[in-house]
Length: 331
Ligand code: ADP
Ligand code: MG
Image (cartoon, rainbow, N blue to C red; front, side, top):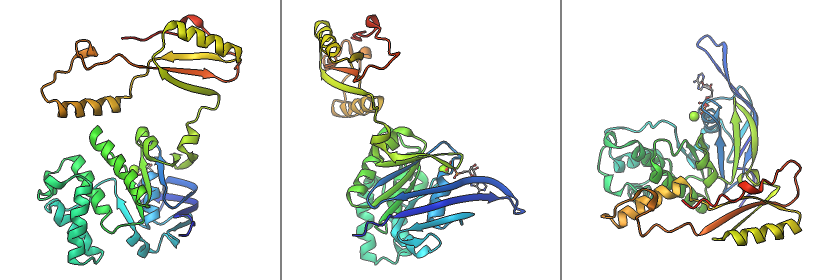
């Protein structure tokens, strides 16, 4: 297996022109990036930062104003390479009067797949994206989330090596979002290279190995997500629940090591986790009443973890305000 980059762009610039050929928008300015085989690469940036433009340039749907692009070892202008690429556009261009099976069959024909192969792949992909019980319904009846799923199935019909996903979670509810992220991880586990763009930070943080942040068509940050998010000067310990005496003792130990306790709290799960847990629990126990604060709910346990953030070295200016350090947020 070759280790040449799947995508290489050098000084890629795109200037959109108006009807009279006058320069209108510099959508991308001198973008240079590489995407390696098997990685999930995230293109992040606010609306209008050039993400969709980048994907269209990679596909050869747009021509660059300046710069070079190679995709899967070919110039982007060679559309034959697109047979090995799957593309989920930002807006769906699917036929509203076809059902899921017919849609995938249609796209399978474009790739000259045999009838048997089309049938098998359609069935597999419909299950993969979770549309099994809606596969005979016309797409015009689909919700935004279902449309996104059939779009992904369509993008995968040719078993592509490289998958380009433009805002894959747009319009999805939290469950659909989580499932889409799980699917993206699955694609990586199958050895595919994935490039996704999004303006939703948590999507990118959860699934991407590396990211590039675009702003106004320019590359601002690029690197591994874990490296970019690592706080260099802090250490985090997560322990089972501690009482105040234990916390005081730990402070003394830290003082001997020239470190101080910066923060003590009882961490809550993030909202996404909470939401998904609530939905799953509701599915499992349909009659159960959800109680505000969890006060009367016997299943609601007190938080059993204490999170401590401490600094390894003494930073000037970090005032160790002893009084506010242990709020002991037992709600
Ligand atoms: P993103 O996908 O990050 O939201 P786009 O790549 O769609 O951003 O757009 C980047 C910039 O290029 C925006 O300012 C947008 O208005 C402009 N743009 C996009 N497509 C066209 C077009 N066909 N003609 C003129 N300007 C365009
Ligand atoms: Mg876009």
